[in-house]
Length: 185
Picture (cartoon, rainbow, N blue to C red):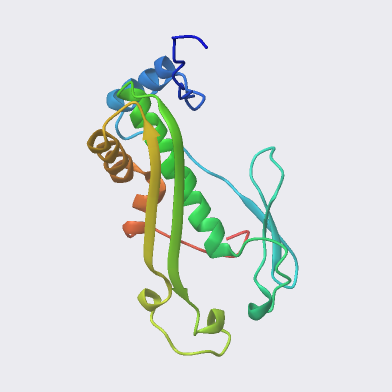
């Protein structure tokens, strides 16, 4: 036997990084024009029962359905689950951007979301009479599992910073202008 004791090495890989230079140019563009806005467009087509297809750009459609106990076919996530997935995706993007900005490589990022939502109004189809603020999400809980080349305190600050600046989180936290009308109006 060799006198040399081989020590086990922990192999640590980092998540695929984003383009930091591009991120910095995008940030500078925002600083130079803080009133600028982007846009999102989605076209949703109802297939039948509660199953719908939402088309976003050139991507495969996002399928939405309701579970069996809500009279759907349970072929896809429910609308509230899709909203939470958008929030999770936005927070993941923000956390990745802030970590990149701070030059902290991440090796793991997972976001767990859950929300309390009720629909005793039955979508307005004869259920309980409810005020708008009583419907929809009543509480959202998010837990972030994050690992990287930083202390727990630094990682916590990244998560808090990304949450503060998250467009989707802020859309959910703050009142926004909302309109709905028939096509052609």
